[in-house]
Image 1 (spheres, rainbow, N blue to C red):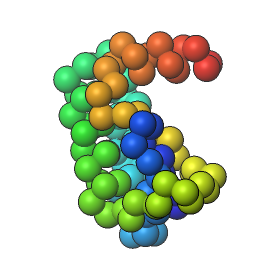
Image 2 (cartoon, rainbow, N blue to C red):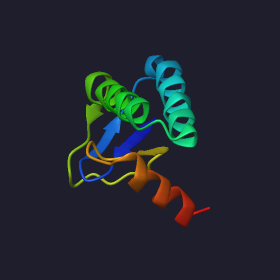
Image 3 (cartoon, one colour):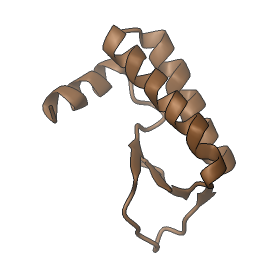
Image 4 (cartoon, rainbow, N blue to C red):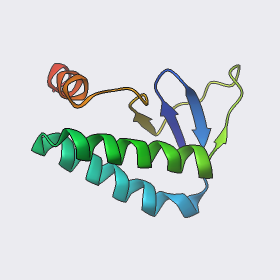
Length: 88
């Protein structure tokens, strides 16, 4: 699986990380929907740490289709809501 962290790059993740990745992604969306800014930031940071820790960053010149696009480390709840509203 390829995950892209916006403004950072792409990471190739092993299959063993997918369960935790999906769980954290679901929790992130729950916090977003609930309007829980602290919870959103907590889950966002945990999700990005998982990708960075278990993934292998791909070279910049390697461009592959991303299976999952994740928010940048500094994205706020309000910015995420605006992004999802814009594309809904």
